[in-house]
Image 1 (cartoon, one colour):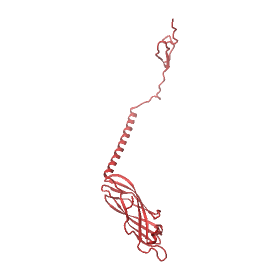
Image 2: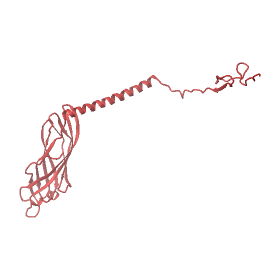
Image 3: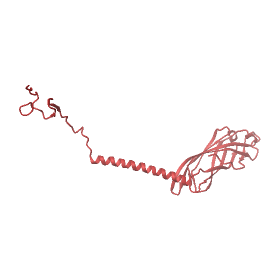
Image 4: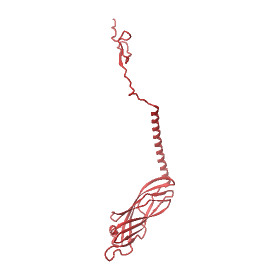
Length: 242
């Protein structure tokens, strides 16, 4: 039986084909299929230039170097901390004096700071000091200037407070009528630890000294009922809680 001729023809006597059409190879007995060749525009072509590759490599190297540097610094800091073993300073109130009169009341405290470190110096930021009464209420505050300590150094600093016209009233407690007055002090500062030119780190220091007891040297009630006189702390306080 004669086979019918294919409706698809090619060559010079067949259909005219567009340049965008391509013939797909087919098996014998199947028609020849044509498809459009999609155009490729410059906008959809990803262009990789040597400069962009270099920038990406530089950013990667920079990030890697920063990560390695941070790790090494942390490792060195931990090593120094373990070797030097920085210790918090210890402190206590060495002396205190309350001057009470009809116009104003002044409280002066001498605070001893001890650097227990044998390999590091200490630097204190300004110290915020608060006086509180037996009920725990703050009644006065002041600021002590910053200072530094060498290894194993003992430093005494003075804190001055103005309590108003009646300091014993502001610091009143059960002992105030028996010729003495009791109160406490809170200290807040930041301490930097250094070894030579190398700074090891810093830590916040919160300290509380309580109770502190002052004893009047004479009768603090005069003939007209107003209070006056001087009270002092007879012995240094215990070491303050840090």
